[in-house]
Structure formats: C-alpha cells, structure tokens
Length: 282
Image (cartoon, rainbow, N blue to C red; front, top):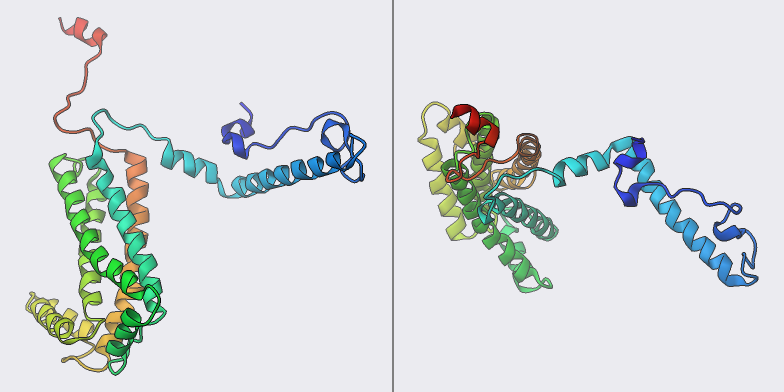
C-alpha cells in the first residue's frame, strides 16, 4: 500500500493528467486555453488553485501527521450498548470551551482593581453591546459545567469505567473536578459586590480549616493573612491563567487516554461467547 493511500481522499494529491502542463491539453499560461477562448484559461486556473490547496494540506499533514491523529480520534471502535450517557464527557468539554470563549470577551472589559472592579462589571452588563448576555452565559455556564462534570463522573463510576486499565483516566477526571470547583471559587469574587466578597471570605475560611496545608493554601489565595488589595488580582490571575491552563492540559491527557484505551460497555451487557468456544465447553 502506498503512503498516500493512507490519507483521506481530500488529502491525496491529484494525479497528473496527460496532455501538457494544464488539464485537457490546455496551457494555463495562454489566454485562450484549449477551447480557443478565455473559458479554458479560467477553468485551468481554478483547477490549479484547487490542486494547490490540496497540496498545501498534504504538505502540512506530511510534517504533522494530522490525518493519523484525526483517524485515531474519529475512527474508533465503540462497544455495543453505547447510548446518550456517553456524551456527558463531550458535553462537559463543550461547556469548558464556552466558558473560555465568553471569559475572553469578559476579560476585555473587566478591570481587576478593587477600586474599579465593580464599576467595570456594571459597565459590561449595562453598556457593552450584548455584555449582559455574555456575562449571563458565563455565569450560568459555570453551573452547567459543574453539573455535567458530576453527571459524567457518576456515569463513569456506576458503569465501572474507572477499573483496570483506566485508573489513570479516572484520577485525571477527579483532578479536573477539583480544578473546576477551584475555578468556580476564584471566579465568584470577580464581580466584587457584597455577596461575592463575603461568600469568598467564608469559602477561604473553610479552606483554612483544613489539616496541615489548609492555612498555607488560604494565605496563598488571599495574598496574606487577611483580604487586601492583592487578593482580587490574585484571584483574577488564578481564574484566568493558571487554572484554565491546567484544565486544558489535563483535558488533552484525558482525551489521549480515552482514545488509546477506549470506552467500556454498559454493565448490563455481557460479552458474547463465540460458537466454537461454546462447543468446546460442551
């Protein structure tokens, strides 16, 4: 089998046709082409442009093996009994992407300054075009993402998908759950109104009551022993840079393991025994 046959059809280079440098015997550099008028030249240029696009895709694929990655991600064997419960992971990832997109829009107008944070949030909601819609999508999208993540973890647990050889996939999922909750906590302070401020104070104090590392982690989040001017910028940096970066990296590792190890069949389905093995048992 030739290496080009492993590529999808749209990535395979178009074979050359006989009849000169252009198709149908037309010279692409002539004004009249093969038909004696300008239509042949236009047609030849269109075909050259199409072949150039295919050639560019093939050139990139040869160096990055994009088609191999695409086949591994899209063309996978799935067990019998696969149902809508198996889409909870993809739904959670879609919710994260929506949070990232709306978060970038909000960051264009938000000011992580204790003296300007509340006013910038109000300006975004009341005066920016579609600002209230995007802020609402980001606010309720956080709740939707956490709910979907819990449902996905529950499905994984009750279907027994955390067992060998998928233990590491389960561990990464648990870490993603913790990071998602941290992202919700750090983002709750950003509007910087009375409710968000005091709710964050309660949450950080609860975290400080944890054993051994609890007080140190609380001091790190506050930027000191008490809430101060550095607390809001620190929460903003954690919410916008550190936590989403970790989540994105772990999602990539999670998807790699799911692609490599596959998914498990529902627990109510039993493996079918081949007829030859049944005869041997009898």
